[in-house]
Length: 576
Image 1: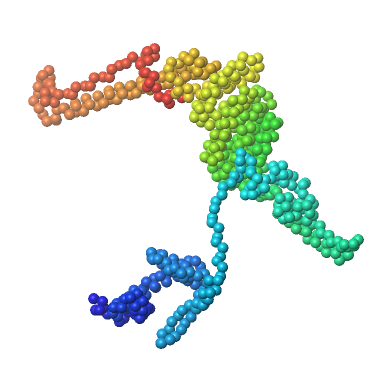
Image 2 (image 1 turned 90 degrees about the horizontal axis):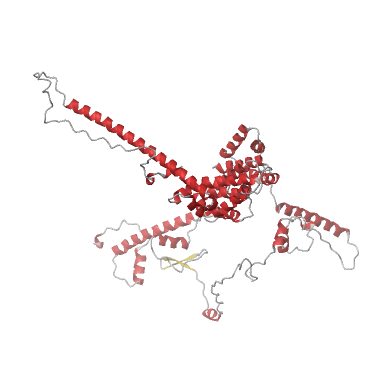
């Protein structure tokens, strides 16, 4: 079939003679001209494809020349084995030769003497790769081994970071001592260069001028280094931002104008362009809380905590970089020992505001790596475990745990209830009126937050002695709270069931009247004249009798003295 092909018009870049030469080298001699020409056409097509793909690789690599690597990648693109032994990073010139009417291109290989190759010493074998483990630190101490860097004492680090300008020489001020030691300049004056000749008492004027020029040059270099290693960079704000900052801070701390304060807090919670001013606001809040806690200014502390809550509620701000400053300030307002000048001031509201801000921080910035909420919970639990903590501190720790959620209250605060009850009993039996007032406030807090949890956990019977044995001094009050909540929930459930029953009776009566009306209309006589019959004997046909009415629902005794609804039908939502 190949002999019948008309291949005269095929333009092949690879000649049939080249195909015949390759076939002869492989031991194939019986190939006619048509097969050779068909193979030449196919080989030319495949080569054009590969060259085209390799040129694409070169073009995507921003190169104009096609390399052997591009050709190998093109072969791999067509799932072909790459050609080995022709990889070179340099240009390989081909030389041409003409002989016997044919042109041949070849590489000009250099002739190498075999004796030189044999006499050449073998290169050194490379060492095997190996891994060796060493300790970076053992129980916080760095081992003195060559693999570890030389240890630097904490005092030296503090000296370099805090008191850097005082401990440096005038010629090297602004440059850390560690950098000077790395440059080999420790103990030498960088800016002084003197040239002395043996046996000469005075330097020449020429040398003095040269030294002066070198000193000026070195002084300029020292000034450049001092600018380069400047510790603090001033945070600049535009004039509008400075005006906004002054107005907002003044409005938030203004105790007389409530409308202006609310507008300022609303701006902090909604304005999306405050990211550049966050460092200033954070510094203002943290320094203000530190100062007002010492001065015991309750009103200013409340205003600053409200500013923190406003910034936390702004969804356009990223406060993650400033949490390490805000969290200690918020904790100071929650568990501070004394936040007001007089004990009769309402510092409880400040602690509650701080607890809400603390819970918001834990909710927004707790991750698996930081474990912020668990660390805050441990800190508040330590305050409760310390008997030397004052009652206001314990109140702040309790309200902070309550704001963190029901699970924290149930797992942390509820087991601590007998111990807290004993402390409250001692405070109420004391002769100090402020302590009695504080203990009553803490008792109300525990009752309001732990009572609903105990309602769901504690089973019947609700006996004060049982509650006292389990919860200590606060047991009878909690028992009274649980009983009151259960009675209120029972009353709500009973009223709801009565309303449902009344609605069911009304619906039954309405449907019954409609059904009777429909039956009357269905069996009413037609309008055609019919013979008159006596009224006494006029009855409905027996074939279509009226349907029997369903019996009314049974009535139940709904007197309040004898409840008919069991406690198991009470919903949990009614307890609130």
